[in-house]
Image (cartoon, rainbow, N blue to C red; front, side, top):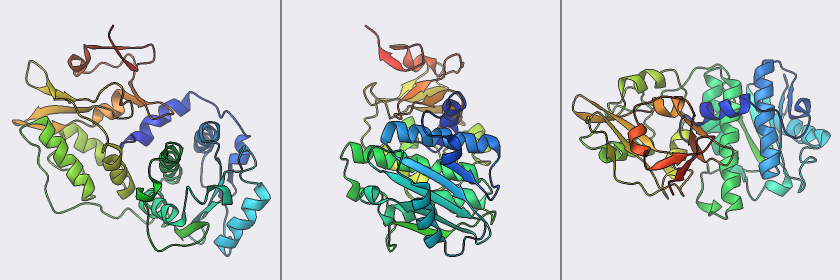
Length: 336
């Protein structure tokens, strides 16, 4: 599961690691100077793990005034031998041109079945471009890579790629689109108010419904005040909302656990469903509001998407996990 905050949570893991394979300078070639050194390192680290875990050799190139970006991407793909670091020739190349305000994700032949043009167009327009419009190029690259990882997971598990996210009407081995660099975010708000409910399960159902409607309004009544303040500064994309809904379809929620004070509640999932992280609620004005700040403060995800607690972080939701034990990293285990 990769939630709306997953990109921020994964950065904590990346900060402590170095790229495990392939020279970082080969993974990120920033000739247009769109990224700082820390951002280049972060992207290279993430893409190094992508190669290690999924055998996908993913390069990023920024270049000013490339001309025909489709032709440029194809020639750079060949010149860089993208896919050469992969045992199976699995290559991807992302080209960003700030002068022409264009972006293209080039897909090697060996990956065309996994990343068809409809999928590529979807992640560009529904995930990458909203970040670019907000001036967050590095976050947009990483957020797109998150969806590539999810797609690769589905391919490995044979999880019905034909039903996965896509945007119809594009063609070719990859896709290009307007980057909208610095254009300002387009509102994903809806006029419909979504209020918290008198039970945690009902509030969670309303949250999923809002995501299905792609209602990214941070001021919705389903959120705690702290969550509303946090979301005001986030870029919430249509792809992220789609991804949360899709990720939880196969999760089996347990009955909500409510603290004896009546103030806090948790909906969690069986330990075996390691990619389904719990949800946290606080009673506000007599109803159960969703506390997403916990995803930022105390929940982390490993490279295989399994969630765990950040060790040493105090929070009021411990009561809901006393029948579990945590290993040295914070992954939940059944008590023996």
